Amino acid sequence: MAETLIQIRGVSKVFDLGKIQVHALRDMNLDIHRGEYLSIMGPSGSGKSTLFNMIGALDRPTSGTVTVAGVTLSTLTSRELAYFRGTHIGYIFQQFNLLPAYNATDNVAMPLVFSGWSQARAEARAHEILERVGLGHRMTHRPDELSGGQQQRVAIARALANEPAIVLADEPTGNLDLQTGEEIINLLAELSSELGVTVISATHDHKMLATSDRILWIKDGQKDRLERREDLTIRTGAIR
Image (cartoon, rainbow, N blue to C red; front, side, top):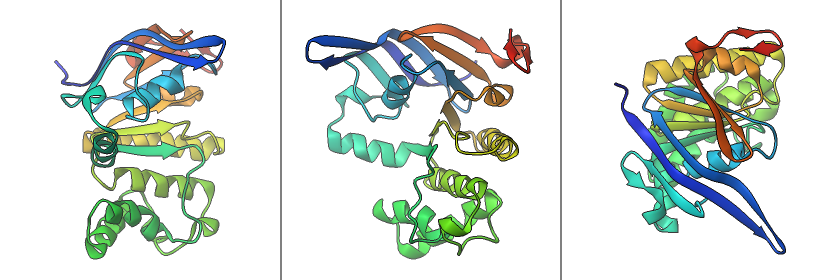
């Protein structure tokens, strides 16, 4: 049986907007396994991003618990949460979020330096992981000298640099063309398999389903469906 890395138990999230309350999540229960590739699907406003933020220790539930690697996140202080994020979780964003004045090596190494790594060690790790994502020949190039796909590869390298247990990918193909998006999807799946990293992707991109181990559909803040990839028939324009 696969090891459970993330346990979500009875998680609800209510946003108080003055005269109204928005129930973004309602009594969510979910186990996520170590090393799996999970895609979270759902329309805007379904609670997909809220769940994503709970897993990433970016927000706290109104009720219920999120436990990651045996640590219940609600028991941590803000400072402890920041440390936990820096040591256990890597983030990949739709907008890449690279520093424009710095080259690929610096963009990957800088978070490591902020975490206490020496400059030399951080740069060595940056070179190693940039080679791994196919950018060994572009290490000294700034973001404006890279294509969109290359920028996303730098972002993936940055997310993996600290050897996290979890990578959270928020619409990682949203700004990419079809072919480049498929390359990024396949790269994430390959890295998840080879490195044993749990990849959780919040996405609207149905291409990501083909490489996912499981797919979670969220509707109105609740778990609508949770399916294994092999139990689905995926065709262009349809999922069964």
